Image (cartoon, rainbow, N blue to C red; front, side):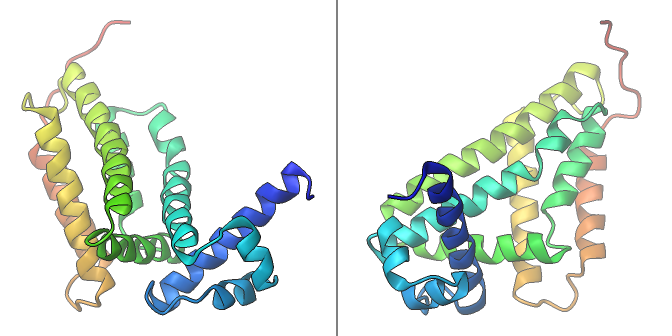
Length: 204
């Protein structure tokens, strides 16, 4: 039996390959043999870690989200004002670079499958709950220092999440007029609209 560290590395190798196949071919066209070929291992090795295609794709969807979240942890912990953190956090989710675009392509496939799969609906509920909670936390910090308007922070977080999702999906399907620059400008406008001009000083 493989050592635990080797198993972790191999599992990640398979999940990365699965996400690449989902991105390039879509979930319906994915075959375990495609994933094995992309990972450079045997089909049997894939089945050792994931007995079924369904188990593989579910794990790949969750892995995609966890990696996306990990890439943004530095934004959440940086020593910057809440408004600056909110701008950076939102900006980081727009499909500007290859890695973020690939993550969005996989996530779009998750949404489609979740329409018919209760387990994926539960996953969507969990991960979106985390995303909303993080944005809500930043907004509450901004309200505490007076840099973000005093409105329901969950409502404001949902406005941000909905805007980013909608703009990103338009970009993914190739809408010519939805460039990254325009997405960025729209998000900046929303953040400006919920910001105040004179934040309070918060005593330490």
